[in-house]
Image 1 (spheres, helix red, strand yellow):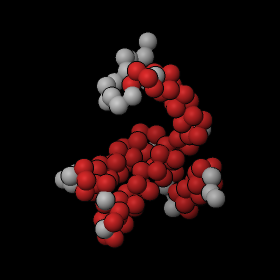
Image 2: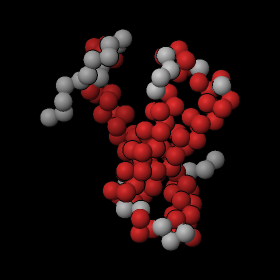
Image 3: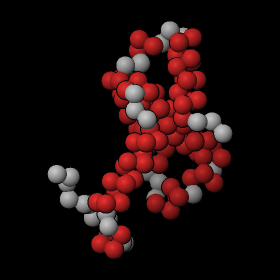
Image 4: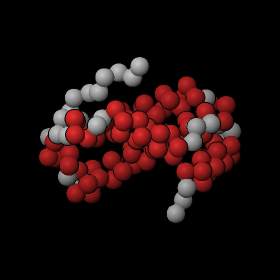
Length: 118
């Protein structure tokens, strides 16, 4: 199994071999991430909720969704790496924050937002 650190190192090597490091600033990586998220969204945009739940059943559409999701994931790793963020720890922290903000009993079955953090 490949770790996030392994992927980050491989992405650094990939960029270094092409002398792309100077382009991989946090701003540019965030913009690339947003662009890839938009491309992922475009694959699902006009589907009904039911169709979007079955998108992976279509070989061509599923391959496109998989590729776009991989792009989002890889740019997220690169951005976190460039900023020195431990993604796994950040994710754990965010889950803990959400668990405290969204009490299961109070939010079960509800899509309402929690009050802003103070």
